[in-house]
Length: 69
Image (cartoon, rainbow, N blue to C red):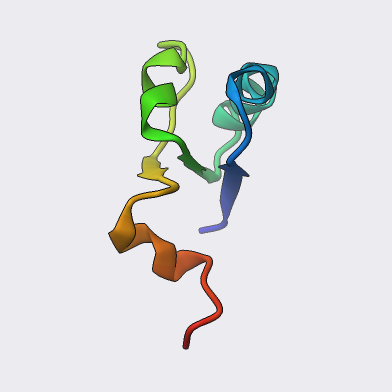
């Protein structure tokens, strides 16, 4: 199965502007993963289905986007 991965590291306004995109993608059959600031998770509306939320600054998640192999 394919997945959509959205990485949003910007500020609050940037995250809010991403919500319509998240809503549209959550209606697709693909899984939707969101990597963003943990404090923004509570801003995701109930009608937006995220399969997995990853905190962008959580130490255990940095392996997803680091240059270290």
